[in-house]
Image (cartoon, rainbow, N blue to C red; front, side, top):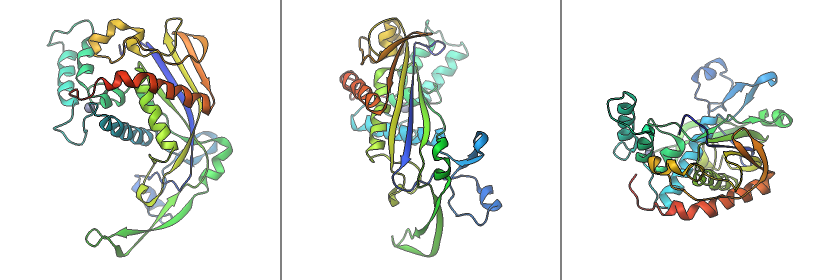
Length: 313
Ligand SMILES: [Zn+2]
C-alpha cells in the first residue's frame, strides 16, 4: 500500500497568536552570538527573499497535534501506546517483524507490511513509528507576506523561575523570553493513504486548537500559545470516479484484511468535484466549508472507529 497512492489530502491553514507565542530555539549558539537577545528566543530561519524570520517548524506542529490526538484516542479508550514508556510501545515488536520481513527471512504474503501495520496502535498508524512512515506530514509555518513585519515585531517578557522545593519564585532567577504577538502563520498538512478517521482525528485537534483547548509552543501554563486557526482549503484526491470522500479501505477493500483497516464501506461528504491524476478530486474552500466537511468526516467515521474500543494496541 505504501508504494502506491490510493488517496491523498491537503489542508491549507493559517494560525494567528491570540496570546503571546514562544516556539523556542534549541540553538545555544544563537545565544552566544547575540548575548543582547533574551534567554529564551523564538526559532528563526531564512525564508526566501524575505530573509530571516520567526517561524514554527513542522516538527513542532506535528508534536503538538500528535500528543493532542493521543489524548483524544486515550479518552475514547482506543488503542494508543505511550512512546515514552517502553513497556507500552507498540512499535518494538512491529519493528522487529518489519526488519525480518525486509531481510526476507520470514515468509510474507502479498502485502508484507500489512502485518506490521496491523500490529501498531492507532497513533503510530497515523503519525508513524520506527516501523512505518507517518500518514500525516506538517510543513513549516511561515508568516504570510502581508504579516511578515508584524510577526517579526516580537516582544520581550520577563519570567521568574519557580523553586521546585517551595513552589514559589526562585530568588534571583529572572529570565527573559521573546514572544511573537501577531502575524498569520500559513502552513499545510498533507495526508497519504489515509482512512477517514485519521483525517477526522486531525480535524478535531485543529478545532481544539482554535477553541483554545490545545496550545502551541512553550510556557503554555503561563497562558502562552493560544492561537486561532483559519482553514482555507481542503483538497482530496482519490482513485475511482464517483462517490464522496473515502478512505483507503473503502477505495481498496481488498487491502482491509491484510492491513487490518477500520473502514470498508464508508463515504464522507462530497465537495466540489473535479478530475485528478488519481481519478477524482474533491475540493472545499474557505474556513466554514472546510470545518463543516471535517465535522462530517468525524460524524461518519467515529461509529466505526469506536468499535475498536478496548482492543489491544
Ligand atoms: Zn503506538
